[in-house]
Image (cartoon, rainbow, N blue to C red):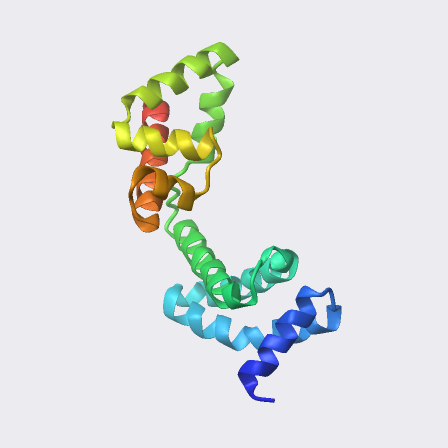
Length: 173
């Protein structure tokens, strides 16, 4: 059996719930994760990123829906961990959770509703529409893209910008 086929067999066995297969998969993936982290993290964060990615892989492996999506899923975890660790190293958090908690603590439900409506109304129509379709109608990105006549990447970008703009509006007030 070739290495690629062997890895696919291990992934399938792990997806079927075999704990030894999951352990073999973690050992097999560690060198790839480390190489990716070395290219995407600060050198001081590589070990932490590898460890966190392996922990996330072990805990959330069952959420991978297709074997073919495994590598992309795994590398997105490592990339996210590198970014998180980098933000922490530079004491930069674009989503200051303490500010959000303070903001929420100072408002009752009626005030929150009014401010959310104001934030939504402040958005350009395309951004407001994509945000409403995703967060209120709970459509998938692909469904939103089809409905709005845009590509999936454009829809993701628009949704990200809409959420960022709404958050900035709410926290500025």
